[in-house]
Structure formats: C-alpha cells, structure tokens
Image (tube, rainbow, N blue to C red):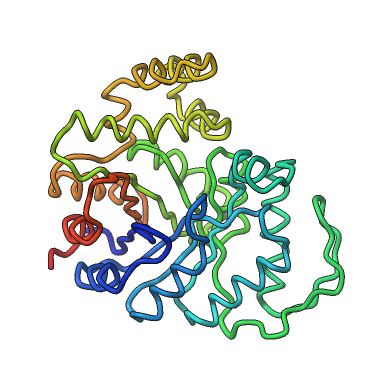
Length: 322
C-alpha cells in the first residue's frame, strides 16, 4: 500500500456532506485534494472538509496562476493555511486556454513564465515578506500579508512537459501529475528528480477511476473524459512527449475536423485502459497501487463515474477497507 492515498473533493455538488468526510477517515485515506474548473472553487471544499476532521492533509490540485491576482492568491492560500495549520498544500498550475481566456476573459499568455513568476512571488509573500518587485509577467508594488500564516504552506506545481517538470524540481516543494499511465511516471519523475539536485520532491498524481464492472460503460465514460482533456494543446503535447502521439492521432484529427463521434471511436481500448482505471473495486485498488509502485508518492483518486454513489465509491476504493 502507498504511504499516502488521496481522494478528490468535492465528489458531488459544491461542498460534500459529513458522510463523505467520515468515509474518507474510516477508509484510511491520508489526503483530500480539490480541483477547480466550472464547479466549486479550490479552497472552500478543503476548509469545510478540514473543519470536520484533523486526520487529512488537504491540497489544491490545482489553482490556476492566472485567474486570481498574485496578492489575492496569497491571501486565499494564507487563509487556508491558517484554517488548516500544518495540513494545507497549495497546488499551483497554468490551467488551460478554455478556463483562463474562454471563461475568465484573461489572456492565456506565456503560461510557463506566468506560473513560474507566481511561484516565485508566493514564496516570500506567504512568509510575510513585503513584495516590491517586477517579474517578467507582472509587477507587485508594496504588498505584504497583514496576517501571514504561522506555517507557510508548501507549494506544489502541476507539470506536464520537461520545462515545468524541471521548474517543479528546482523551485517547488512537490509536483502534481495528471492524465498519465503508470508506465509514464518514471519518465516524469526522472526530470523532477534531476532538477531537484538531491532535494526531496513529493510526486502527487490524480488517478481517474470508473469503479464499474461493466467494461463497455466504463470505457464510454473514460473516452469522453480523455477526449475532453487530451485535445487541449498542453495535454496533447504532453502525450506526444510521452510517445503516445501516434495512438492519439485519430482523436486529434477527427476532433479538429468537428467529428466528435469519430474522435471517441478513434480511442482504442488499450489506450483507454492505460489512462483510466476501471473495473471491480479490487481491480481498481490494485491499479491505483501501480502508480505508487512506479514512483508516485501520493495517488489521488478522481472519481469519473457519474452514476457511482460517492460514499460507496470512497469505501470501495479505500486503502483500508472499513
């Protein structure tokens, strides 16, 4: 069993009820990690969950580097760190053109540089230092947190390709991986570890799971999720770097041509099975453990199945069966 084992919250709706938290604790989960797209914000579910138990580490996976100004992001992180002392991890990432530009009306310019600059701003800001600096993508004049957290939270970086992976290794406290197969972990980890110069960098990975024994239905759910993500340019480039470009060419070509049905059909079962865990509970748990065996320190289950009962799924996928 992995030393750490996480679950993505909220599972349904904007904020989970007490039964979800109780199931996470009973199941032996060590972590709950949020996401931020078109549903809940990244911080509120963690604070609500953390108020119900002191037995979980709580992290954002991820907060975009664009959609909050640097000072506001520092304020949000400081508030979460104060509410969850010693248990909060700030996961930061570039996000995507759809979320940043399409939904928030902010230019998605120079995502690597923006994420790097926000990371470099947050370090001293969360330590309570006064910031008066010009970065490559923004400037901050005369900002200081009025009430910095007693324990500044560690900052992890969501990373796909070598540039961001090296940045995570060199300057962040850990790295968050997403949409990869167990066999891809070693390649990503080698880049992070090479840039870390011997320093310890935790590797967190979101693992997408459909806990359904019906293979046809599970793969249909998985195909829709894969198509939604892997047609985003950053994810497409990531999988090209991983050597999966030829297997995804049909998806990309048909998606670009507007043939959504054909794009889904172009995803072979073997590729779907590589990227999304599915099957009965025992099979799913064993497959999640494979990520840990390949070098992930904290696998974080992300439930994809819209028909799954949240509490049942948490129990079935738990590292310790309640």
